[in-house]
Picture 1: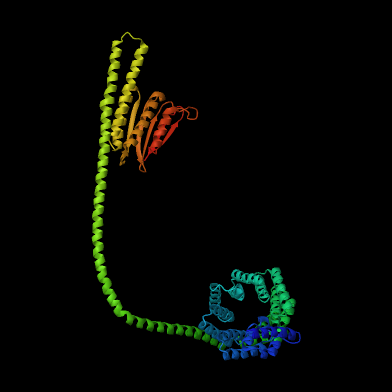
Picture 2: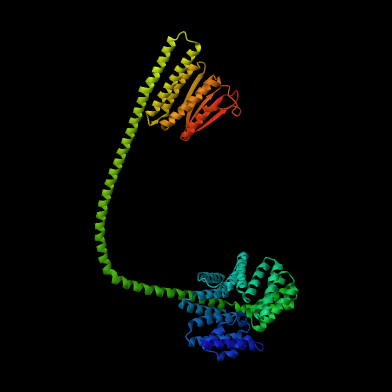
Length: 605
């Protein structure tokens, strides 16, 4: 290992020394024989892209010789990588069938080695090579490659070329927003990793998008930056590419003389260095530029060159063979998968035969145990049901006993109230009446006081009866409430014989309400009627009840003198009414205007 490292460092020193006198690839060919096989392979694989395409003939020699070394040393991984390098120079010499074939051979090796990262890189290369022939397949391979690299969590630098080339495919589809998105992702990764090779590629492709959007100023800024970097690196291929992009810029701006100047520079470099795809592009746009300048002679010259090159690249047999190679690759994948499935099927069948007897015995044993467990389960389930019924019965009996006790307690309290307190209050009234009779000569003041005490005691008896009425039941219907209201109104008529009382009942299908709620509602209606009798000077008092959305709504309305709510203190009566309604979750509303009567509305569930 130490010996190999020393040789590699020696190569770096010698190559830098020789590079001043000869081409980079020439320097590698000069020093390579002194290296071990492992260092030879590593050296060739590490040749940068721009140096590789600077002389495709020398690069081809290096790749083919190094492939033999990889085969000799049984280094499958390096051989697969060298196939990808072979595809590179074949692509730049327009041998697209062979380039596709080399890429597919690389993928087959990487699949055997289970190298998802290199399979992904190969998909990216294959997608790029198919872009001008089968865009749908190119998209599929490019997308698969990017997804694999992202899934494998490869270093960001592995995705620089993929993102950039994917953006080019979107440009071909004229989806410029998506193209710009992927080009800028590539540019960001280039800047992060300080990749001076990928950086100008990303810049030129971003410029290409802006050019199509006719944003010429920003496009030229990106192109000038890319050309500067490539000249500084002495990247001949990149410089050629940049001149052609500048030609595109000036052609789009209709500055055809400047376009010709840049296209010619690109054409000369491409012709000298055998960059066939770039040369073909230059001839096409030199023809278009001269045609726009109305220089028919030169336009025809470059048109003939372009036609010859176009025919050699896009002939029918070439396209057919590439399609056949892709079908062969897909078929091979399917056949491999089928073979694997057959092996798995045979293994499964053997395993099934070995386990069949055991499975039968196990099934019978489980069936027997299942029957036992099922019987035990059903028995326990029956016991649980019986126990639950007993518990439910006990709960029901307990609830009935509790309700009976509560009812007995209510009846006892109501009897006590009626028999004891009621009789005592009646005795007080009788005593007061006797006292009034005995004291005939008493003063009027004393007689009035005795009358007031008698009246108050009578009212107390009526209220006590109302309370007893509510206590005797758990629930009451509005019919019960209606009866109590009618009884109260009959008493009120005696106090104001000239007032007409009306009661309207529209409470159809009303559910029962609790006795407590009924008592509160009755007291509020009492208070409302009392206020109307005392203060309203009304000729008519209307009590109306109705149900709306399962809610009981009652209003007490008079046609009396009314009042201004904002100027009058409503006093304790209204506060008591509000308190009663709030205790049962109800609401109360007072509506009144001077000379327009008063209405008190209550509502509750």
